[in-house]
Amino acid sequence: MNTTIKTNIPTALLSYLESTAATHANQSFRTQALDSLLNQGLPNKKSEEYKYSPVEKFFKELNFSSKGNSPNADIFKTLNYPKLRGVEVFAINGIIVASSHTEPVEVSGSTIKIQSLKQAMLENNKIADTYLGQLSSKNQDPFIALNNAAFEDGIFIHLEKNAIVEEPIHIINYVTSQENCLIQPHHLFVFEENSQTTIIETTIIKGSSVGFVYNSLVEMQAAENSKINYYRLQLGSKSDDTKKAAVFNTQINQEKNSTVDTNTITINTSWLRNNHNIVLNGTNCEAHLNGLFLINNHQHVDNHTLVDHQQPHCQSNQLYKGILSDKSTGIFNGKIFVRKDAQKTNAYQSSKNILLSDDATINAKPQLEIYADDVKCSHGSSTGKIDTDALFYLRARGVGEESARRLLLHAFANDVIETIKNEELQMTIKEIIEKQLYV
Image (cartoon, rainbow, N blue to C red):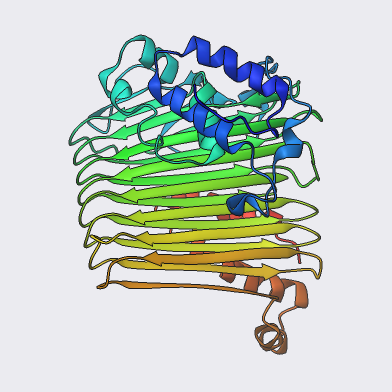
């Protein structure tokens, strides 16, 4: 290891990383990730990509040797989570604790494998060995590096060539701990040529008053002609909780003619960051990234996207919306990167937000970085309060003020929700938002 160690990395974290490195010395991607993290340090206000979301404070009191006590699978008997049709996978802190399918099974006539990533590694699964740590290894984000350097387990999903799974795979993940600790699941999803499926990941962040950092990483390979829908529902509580931080890293690699739709819905989480990175690594790819967040009190949500157009004739669309009240803070930092060879790129990016109070804050930074000369790219951002003319119009027709506000907020949110192709999930999210809207 030839590394300059940044001083903002706590001594306890260094000791933990050293012990982990010794355990995984045979995996080169982990060594590279550790070097990257130690060179960068933890993000702070001087880090351009994290200037509005410094995270050092969350690491100060963590016990890195602790796994964190967590409940068993029985918790899901009492937990309130969306009940959706399809294959259910139950996880606590990102680790499978129960599933309707844990062995390779036939779903809708196709074979799909869902199992613990650790188990797949122990079995020397060739697919897992090929992609694990490779899809995200070039990303220098410190949280991705931290996860790659020290994760222990996660979920492995493999869809074979030509498999079309119509039933969605629903991962219900409960994040909690009784101790201050670092929680790092690592998921690997590999979809082979001509495969199609829908993954729904519902994460519920609740629990005790202790603090923790939840740092998850999804690596996804979408092979040639694959069509993948990946929906994330992130649910917290209405209260302020200044001790918990959740970082969701998603690294997607798309090959020729593939289509990936993602939609991230975030409701009432105290401090949360989504790092969403897509590499369009083949011609005629489509990537659609949509997101919606509703927050209040002192809550903080940061959506950070990067779409890397590497090949010609690809298109990407991004639409992120936020509804903020009280003293909450939202961030959107999105970049479209078009490389020299990516001619005929069509890329669009939009961020729109409504502030329901004078103390709510939004920081939006849409970016274009283009090195090709035959492209159609645009970006934009707007933030404001509820349209008073529209409000007046509705009230003039006998609609009460509160109902009129709700109608306008629903209409604002629906642009994102209606991009979800799973109708059952779409209806569920509408019901959740109905209960959460503050006017």
